[in-house]
Image (cartoon, rainbow over all chains, first blue to last red; front, side, top):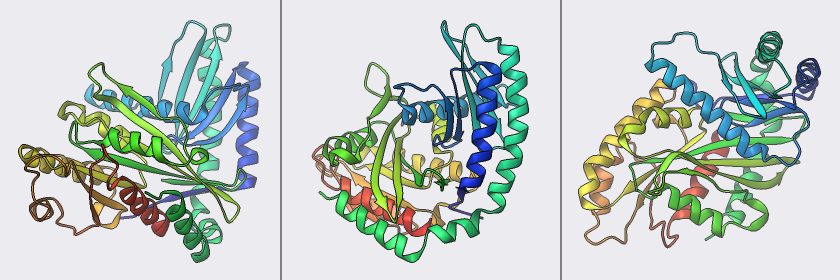
Length: 164
Length: 191
């Protein structure tokens, strides 16, 4: 059983991701679009995020999705891939990418939700392909970054920072 | 799942504090928040009920700073402890890179601690992880309560894997940072 699995997003793949998110932002007129890991970590964003706390937003959105998924399981829903949170001014459409990432579209009331759903589905297909490539290149790319020296330096930094 | 973002030169790791209701998970995070050096800590986010019980999770991002040109961040989460929130605990555990199991040393809580540990093992298995081969630390919390269960007894019933343990009193801060240090280093070791 694989334990700590890592996902390494290279610069080249991040350019592809930015392109997909940028196009989705433009075509839907969304305020902003986020790509999160399902553990809540932010991978990329496009659009106007302003002063918003993206770290907290990512944790909450991933938690909300994961929680809704548990609800769907209790209800016997087998195919649960997206949630829509409707607000008075802004709404949020979240869809799952390959059981690993979450594509989040934050859009204002003038944008039609149907358009967001259709274009998000198209973006998910493209992101799916990128995710497959990221997964394939993972171990090798990680070994280049996380060397023995890196681990030692990180552990020293932990000792220094988290003192009594 | 640790995330390594080469373009933004960031590494993100997720650590989850697990345990029974009122065992001190949130208190651990509150102590870390109030005592971690200023530039390292982000905002503490808490979703609690009026009775101060965690409803969904607490969240505290910690920034280790630059390591070999990469910014390393640990995202600390707690789960809600009450029995009825099991599904929520699974949701928060999703994608964890390390787990701290916080044990309430109050004598009447032994059975509850044991049940919580069994549940954690089951949930981890469901997520495809084996606690025996995973960054996992146990914290014997509330060592300051009268008649606290002896550590040897706790160890016998709750630490079959013989993982690293720490005696703690999260309210005073005793044992909080040693627990955090060990789980963070273990995550780095197995990254």
